[in-house]
Amino acid sequence: MANLAADLTLLGIALAGALVGCGLALLPGLHVFNVAGLALALSARDAIGLADQALAMFLLGALVGWAMVNVIPAVFLFAPDDANVIVVLPTTKYLMRGRGAEAVMLVGAGSLGALVGLVLLSPLLDEVLRPLRAIIQPHTGWMLVAIIAFLLLGEWPRADDLAPPMRRLASAWGYLGAGLLTFVLSGLLGFVLFYRSPIAVESAFVNLMPAFIGLFAVPGLLQILLFGAKPPPQITALPAEIEPRLLLRGSLTGLSGGLFAAVLPVVTGGIGGLLAGHATAQWNDRLFMISLGASKVAYYVGSLLLLFVPGLTLTRGGMAWMLSSVYVPYGWRSYWLAVAGIALAGAVAFVVLVVLARAAAKLVSRLDVKWIAVGSLGVAVVVTLAFTGAAGLIIMLVATTVGLIPVIVGGRRLNCLGVLLLPITLNVIGVGPAVARWLGLL
Image 1 (cartoon, rainbow, N blue to C red):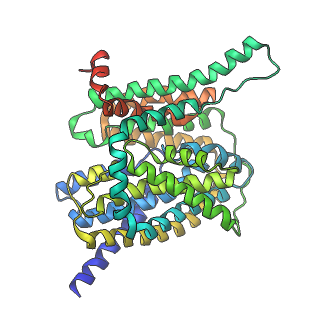
Image 2 (cartoon, helix red, strand yellow):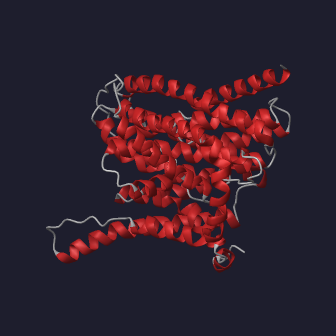
Image 3 (cartoon, one colour):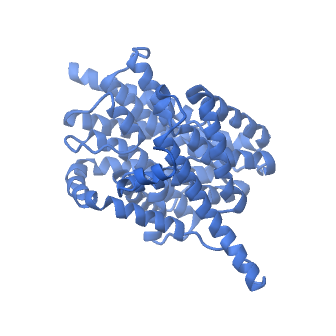
């Protein structure tokens, strides 16, 4: 009876974490990892009354709630995180047609499908991942190089076919060059942050936060502020039905891409979804949004769930790395509690998402989006200053200049993930320190 009461208490803590995560998801530029780092710091000082397994369940719930609901600002405020960034274009088309709530629900349906898939796969994760890890681990370096090559080669030249040949050539390479420039510059910024970060040691748990805010959140908000138009009146009625065939295919596609990203170091849910989408030949916007929602949640939640698998010792994703520094789950009871917490938090977060989607659809056409962008930029600046000080604000400004390149030229914003991919890939293949010395960082 005592064990049952303790388990119910932990599930209640996970539910509370999910509600907190849903609230955090509404603030553009505020990543759940940043708040998790603060929670870990406060827990170490006995300031929040949560520690060990209780803290782990709270963060698990917060991650599920945030990953489910953060599509709201991505759709209505154009402020995506790294996993949402490639879904912005189709969701923007839906928003400008008055169907923003439908776009939210398509992404949310994929997210819920991924959570259901994770729960159903949970009895098999241990048996599947052990041999898979043994196969992948020796080949991690060249796999990351191949993913970078695919990401860069996936840029497609855009040129006016009626223009003179030299103008077409210049236009095509202007677009392709912008993608390469974005990747290289963000990668150089990543080298600085990895090898000689100006951020104080006590703020090391949010070392990458200013860069991610600058690369992914601020450029979109500036775009709204300078060129944004008021969205048309939105249809608040949610779609009556999502085709089961599309939902199943999109969820399975996103789940496979997200789990691939969760197992392979550095790869994020956005890249995993992109790879899975190409592998399965997705053909329409609805399928694309469903799969990206699934990939995002499978990556974030799946990478943390791997930490709970007994004896696997596979730490992937920012939340797992932070949590493992203070608590390491042990035994199958902790694992199944985590699975139950994911199911409970996911169900509640989806209900919250439905309510918020309708509320956002009603409000967005009544409010001036430029003022919303100003407020969101203010939140981004305050959060950056609060967590990382003036040094973090400078990093955010530098990252913003890089993040504006694809916004202005029209390239793929996913290239901004060079901030992680370039330094870590070069480190994995053994040449990272040599490059850092050449750059004068060592």
